[in-house]
Length: 224
Image (cartoon, rainbow, N blue to C red; front, side, top):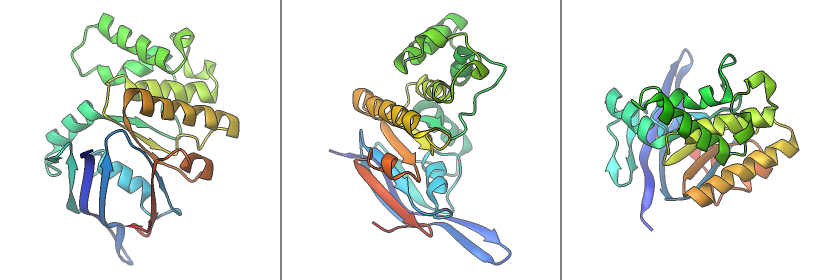
């Protein structure tokens, strides 16, 4: 199987009064299509930085990223925006829902720039919410939903643009153990049924077991 995402010597440096910090230090990875990747390591090891770089949300200092065999133009803002719009869905630890919008309106946010009619946006949002088990919560506000349901809305929002990759940063960090397993099972189901690549940063040993590819970082380097 041809690798879908590959990095070569990916490096991210930050300047600090005490000197340069290597948030990412010459990371080379090759990940096949449909993989469920977990990224673990101590705080400050570079987990979230790697996620942000792979998703096009930050520019690495040096190195290259290839997706579907094509080198990403990391110096071109428009190219990175287009990559995110076409291929990336994001799930955050704190859900990041807009409190004055309903579940469906939150899910439709990524569609506002796509030129779809309001009716088409509603259909897409409805299908996304149904796919995460929330067909009956279309018009509920975040405050009317449990934590687990809020994270399901966030996952539906990540899916609504039909991305190739889901990037999840500690998606169970604000959930109790029972709800955490529900969300992890949902992400695994999406990975298997839709064939989406999932990159998940986690501190949880339980969550780490869901990955068929497991990456461990320390001081910006892959150590496994």
